[in-house]
Amino acid sequence: MSLDGPVLGVQRSLSGRRWVWHGGIWHGGVAGGAERVGLGIAERLGLPEIVGRLLALRGVDAERAADFLQPTLRALMPDPSLLAGMDAAAARLADAAGRGETVAVFGDYDVDGACGAALMVRLLRDLGCTVLPYVPDRLAEGYGPNVPALLGLAARGASLIVCVDCGTAAADVFAALGGRAEIVVLDHHKTEAPPPVPATVNPNRLDDRSGLGGLCAGAIAFLAAVATVRALRRSGFFAARAEPDLMALLDLVALATVCDVMPLTGLNRAFVAQGLKVMARRDRPGIAALLEVAQIRTPPVAATCGFALGPRINAGGRISEADMGLRLLLSEDPAEARSLAEMLDAVNRQRQQVEAAMLEAAYAEGARQAEAGHAALLVAGAQWHPGVVGIVAGRLKEKFNRPAAVAGIADGLAKGSARSVPGLDLGAAVIAARQAGLLATGGGHAMAAGFSLPAVGLDAFHAFLDERLAAAALLPAAADLVVEGTLSVAGTDRALAEQVARLAPFGPGNEEPTFAIARARVARAERVGREGTSIRAFVAGEAGGERLKAMLFRAGEGRLPEALLTAAGGLLHLAGHLRAEAWNGSVTVAFIITDAAACD
Image (cartoon, rainbow, N blue to C red; front, side, top):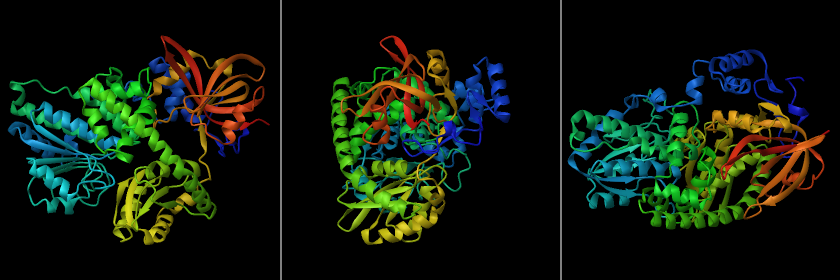
């Protein structure tokens, strides 16, 4: 089989994608140097050849393979002092603990902000501080610190305000505080210069040389906790009291890292791998309650954070009470936690309804712009809910393979969020637009950004994004589907699925391996789930024989779900992920369908 052509000859699948080989892998083999490296890894570590080959395709060599498969903080944790501003931040936090100060923790309303704030609140309370948590209301206050909120916290006795996942661009707000309280910023959003406050820890500061720019704010908060405890240990603070259990905070770091779509490589991989182990213990009442409400009975994986926990925590900040997620994460009462989890679950269902109402119009306008050749998509609607525009932007980005920005317009002002595709730095583009005077506010990181501007300036902003992100115009209408190997139905056994799972946690930078099954015969298929939005199918080889369960999630309308539901007895090429699923003490194999194509 030629390695230059598409996988199984699929030039355009049912979802409009071309299937391409990853690094020359085909039929269980790897071409060129990757094959040699993979075999070397397998022999050195006693692994199946397929695991060695998959590691090689991820750029992992024999020296790093053990740490990749079993990522630990002992092996991968950096010295927090590598981060610019960290020593000053740790010293100020340690001083607050030593003096028993009242400290306010000002968070953001997304998962990263809620987790990072919860981590810092828990740390400071364990160190003896009185802590005032605060999350701004998305509609009334907007993103980040604002003068009335900071003045209010100072009036309640806060001598120190710690801003988590925000604050980097709030120099004017901090100046208006007039010295009533000191500020420490723990953030990761792109910035030109840090604000003039006692300490700003942000790996994306221009003067930061740590190389840790891929960390989320929750991870930065954890490193600040490590540095603070180290400073207190050196001062003898713990001579008469126990040190806080920092490892118990890793469930928050894992949740934040996954939900903020950080690369799951290096240190982030260790944070998530170890944090999921902590999460599996269900010691934190809020997370335990949310897992129950989401009906997660098995040990959590990265996808649990991204698809079950994260959307529910985000829902409060999007269309309800902004601090509901933080309150859940801080709750120590199982009954209170269960009540908050149920409220967030209900709010999330409401959010889904609001989202569905916006998506149809956004898709139609996105299709028009994509057809017209725009490199970036910019869609706006009157009274579109600002808490949902980010989700809609993500859906547009996925559907059209373009950077996408979505805004709601009210009282002549457009407020929105944007999402990017790999390789195009959206945060830098939005910051440049703000510097050019096109935006009232704007900032973010490579994959996501937020902005606001007078509605009359939307066309000019769109033109700027088109120019700045012009490379996106060369992207195909649908992103290629990268396939790492082919499987037969008969070969998809539990042992193989469990070996593939050794590469988890999966996410950006370590995508879950995608395999193709040629000419699978669909025995039967049906809609399942509360809303009927999933499809369960059973497939066999072309000649019949043993059946494999296959699942398609988020199966609304479209060619792909229609083909599965009407293919009884027919043949389809399938692409997806092989998983071993534990349930009620038994383990079964399932193929999670991501795409399908008609057979010749």
